[in-house]
Image (cartoon, rainbow, N blue to C red):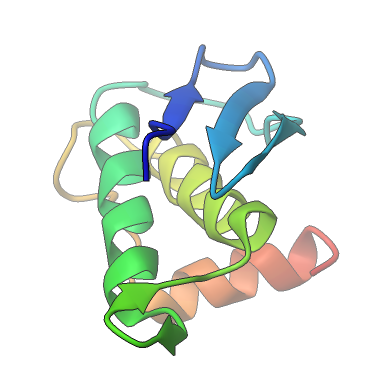
Length: 104
């Protein structure tokens, strides 16, 4: 309760995180970026979607941090594959297909 969640993103650098009593790093997805506009917004949207739709324990959401953050990072990576911040936002199907191609 008194430990804040901290996430640090930096483009193609590893994601650094402290969340749910754990911490670690997650390598960035290697993609051929066209435009990075909206990547951070897509990451945040993926994170919030995962928190809102993840497994629950009582009144709190308790998804596995690594899985939650990997999915959020994939959302950010997918947005960089197109131009602009809105049109390249991924659907759930696009996200799932991308994650399968990345090995999970």
